[in-house]
Image (cartoon, rainbow, N blue to C red):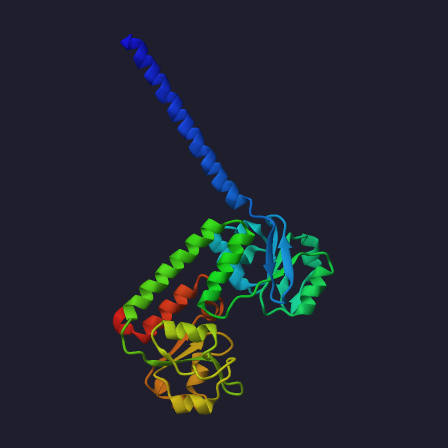
Length: 308
């Protein structure tokens, strides 16, 4: 009798285990279906158009460098079959066929490639979008706020478009953690005044208070000397009046050496005392995953006593 009871109990245990495993598998499958079954999705583009994506895009052309960088960070770079001339990071992206740039789209190559989707940044003109749509091509012009939060908007949008929401959430969380760690190190420190040179000479311009780079300056623990300007416009007269502690310039189109000998700029205290720093333009101008690198670079210049 005892032997029979043991057999019955063992059988019941096995049944319960199998049932439990099946139930867990059903729940897991259901959870996966909730993520996978996210199409169609609707996105409002820069021009206010309602774009409906019926299925997960398999072949994509991107004319936005920051979106290409995000696609690589999300692990969906295999979908890229074309890029703009300026989509050159990471290095592997250069191997993807070049389809021109926003000013001179290679329409013939784009049509021949027959992509599921063409991604464009907010800098594109509406007539170029129309030209692509007239060829029967699905076009999406993504637009995000010109600040750090805008980067996370892009990540979230691409996560939804390519059905990699979990990867998008993980990427965003990792970046936010890195940003918080940098900011926590400089909290409470005396902020120097800093000025990011966008153009100089005939076209004086800077990272004003309403710009993405302007926000990075503040986040990195400095006072943006051009915070009272807007739309990148800032005169040399305004700059001389502020005479900021630190100057930052890009490594593109002009060099640090030119600024050192340019009238007005050469008289600034930061120039005379060796606090003019040159940075990688692409790292700072693109609203992508490398904003953490940009923030770290600025924080090191603003607070070397902490980071060096």
